[in-house]
Length: 75
Image (cartoon, rainbow, N blue to C red):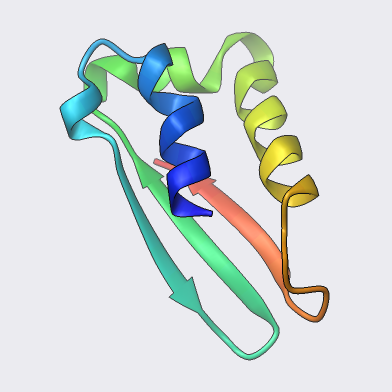
């Protein structure tokens, strides 16, 4: 899942080397934290959050474990 998030976000940003995805697994959910360069935050979020919502939709649709929920935090 981390590779999927990175492959979606990397072409959108000016500083692809600063894209970092960390994973935290809990009992009922898996949380992915996406951090990018400060100058690229607007590009990842998009107008009215449309790009962020689209990224979340793809990630949620690609989940593999049916028992755990997936969350994506964009920082």
